[in-house]
Structures are given as structure tokens and as C-alpha cells.
Amino acid sequence: MNGYIPYGSNAFQGTQYFPQPQGNVYLINNSLEVANVPMGSGLSMAICPSEGTMYLKTLQGGAPSLIVYSITPYEAPTQQNEQPDLVAQIAELRAEIEALKKPKGGNFNELI
Image (tube, rainbow, N blue to C red; front, side, top):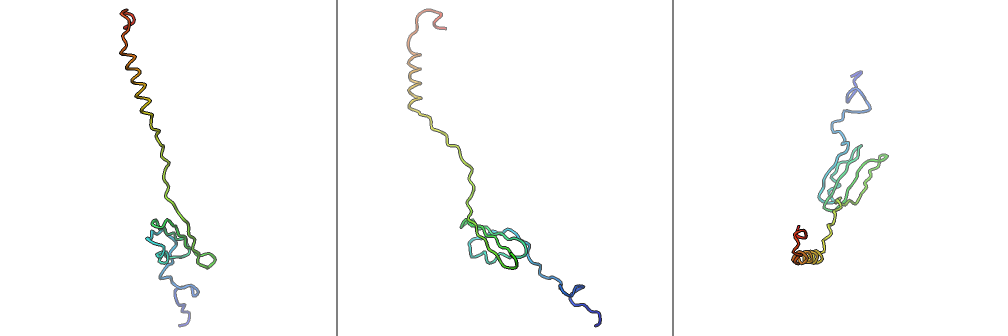
């Protein structure tokens, strides 16, 4: 067995059969499921819409890190249409109708 190097060509680092996750986005139903989100060398994000939270899991300096943010859905501002004053509009229309009902002079030029 002279010259035999176990685990491939590099004796210090073996073949990686189960690669670590590099990070991904996960959708979870409650905050207890954040423990099932894999954590590797990248950043894993879990969103829990039922509780309005976002979890970030990562390794920082070899130590696991979990950061929680509170999230709220974005709603586009709606323009509120002002309701016109219907009573005032009706009064104006009645005044115009009454003005049109008034007889005009018998002069032909006034009728045109």
C-alpha cells in the first residue's frame, strides 16, 4: 500500500458525498419550522407569511446566526375619489331647468 492516498488525491480533504447547501429561499407555515431550514456556507431565508416574519440563517465566523425581521405586505396607495355634493348639483340643475322654463320675449332674435 505504498503510495496509496485514501479519499481521492487530496489526503486532507475527502470526497464530499453530501454537499452543504449554498442558501435558498423557503416558505414555512410557522416559526417552529425554521429549525428545518438547512444552513450552509450561504444565506438561507425562510418566509412565514402567516406570522409576518422573515428568518435569515447563515454561518458567521463558524458560528450559526439567525436574524428575524418583521414584514408587512406592500399595498399601493389608493386614490380616494371625493364624493360630489349631490344636493348642491341637484339644486344647480333645478335652477337651470327653471331658467329654461321662463318664457322669453316674442322677438325672433331672442329665441335663437
